[in-house]
Each structure stands twice: as structure tokens, then as C-alpha cells.
Length: 239
Ligand SMILES: CC(=O)[C@@H](O)[C@H](O)COP(=O)(O)O
Ligand SMILES: NCC(=O)COP(=O)(O)O
Image 1 (spheres, rainbow, N blue to C red):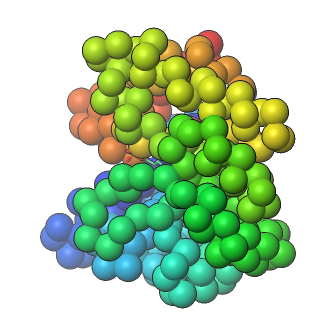
Image 2 (image 1 turned 120 degrees about the vertical axis):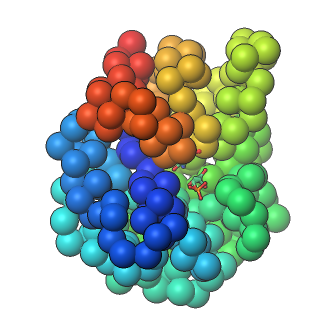
């Protein structure tokens, strides 16, 4: 079974655009769970332009499905937040300051020592650690050497190539997923997954443990409503 974790960053972006508390991020997370989501993902950034650090602490009190915090562990504040929150999973993402969104995975070879320390720190606190990587076999192997429990494959290149040539788009992901399975890593995927491209990814990589989806899912909810949308995404994974 592949779990759907809804990334609620975009709900916070909407809230922040006006100040106040509408939409309510915590209520939306709980509604996502009630509508069938099997996890909630947040990706706080140092400028707190969407999810704020306080949101993360508030969510932890009430989220009952898998809580996944994504972010760049080079920020001490991020490390402290994760350790204070103790989510089910932390996903380490090397996002650059000033980037609009995440745009690359880790070089798990160059950053091996630092990642190894971080993985150990989080695992000692009982938190599962996933490392965000491009679909490159050596990067997956590198994540294993760092002690990670899972990798999250960065799917933006898949999503971009999908409309032109979906077989070519998914090919590196199938290879990377195979390596993850061989070395005993769990497998997550995320970024720009959508109703258009999700089913094929799942068909090609049936052993995916989890997908985290935010941007497209929240956009779809404008047309279909949040409950219907979550059910539609779940059906795409039910293959
Ligand atoms: C790691 C990843 O791909 C997502 O967490 C993505 O970065 C979502 O963040 P934004 O909502 O800021 O685009
Ligand atoms: N880890 C990926 C994620 O949480 C959501 O990414 P996106 O669907 O907002 O592109």
C-alpha cells in the first residue's frame, strides 16, 4: 500500500496572504485526515513564508496520522524544531535559501559525514529519517550508507517529462527504486505529483511506501473540493 501524505504548505500560504487565521491550517490538516489522507506533510522554511514553526508545534498536538516534517537540516532552528516535535518522519531536503521550492536532491556522497551525523541525531530521538534524492542509483546507495531509513525520490523531472514521454520519464525512477529495495531502504516520492502523473508512477513502482503531494492537490481542491480531491488521489494509488 502506498500512503498519501498531504502537504499543507499551500494552505498556510493562503492564510499568510491576509494575516489572520483563515484558512485554519490545523483544521485543514484534521479535515484531510478525516477525508482519508494517511499523513500530513509540512515543509517549514527559515522565512516562514508558508508553514510557520509554531504551526508545526500546534499540528503535532492534534495530527493522528503520520506527521512528516521536511526541511533543510543545515538550519539549527530546523533541527531543534524537529527534535522538539518528534514527528513520525523527518525528510531532509537540501533546499537553497531564496529558491521558490525544492529543486534538487542531496549529493549523499559529498555530504556523507554531515548527513550521517544528522540521521543519527534524529534516529536516536525515535524519528524515521528519509533523505530527499534525485533518481540516481549512487545517491540512493549513499543515503543507505548515511544510515537513512528511506529515500524520497524528487519527482519534478518525472512530472515535467511525463506529458512528452512517460516511459522515458519514469525510467530513472524505476532504477533508483530497485536499488532502494535491494539495499533495504523504504521508498517515498514527491514533488509535482498530480492526478495526471500519479497512477503511472504507482503502476511502475508498486512498492512505493508513500507519496507527499501539496501543490497540485490543493489546486485540484479548488475545483473538486478537498474531500473529493483526496479521494481521487487515493483512487490513483489504488492500482
Ligand atoms: C521536498 C518537496 O519537494 C516539497 O516539500 C516541496 O518543497 C514543497 O514545498 P513548497 O510547498 O514550498 O513548494
Ligand atoms: N515532498 C513533496 C511534497 O511534500 C509536496 O510537493 P508538491 O506536491 O507541493 O510539489
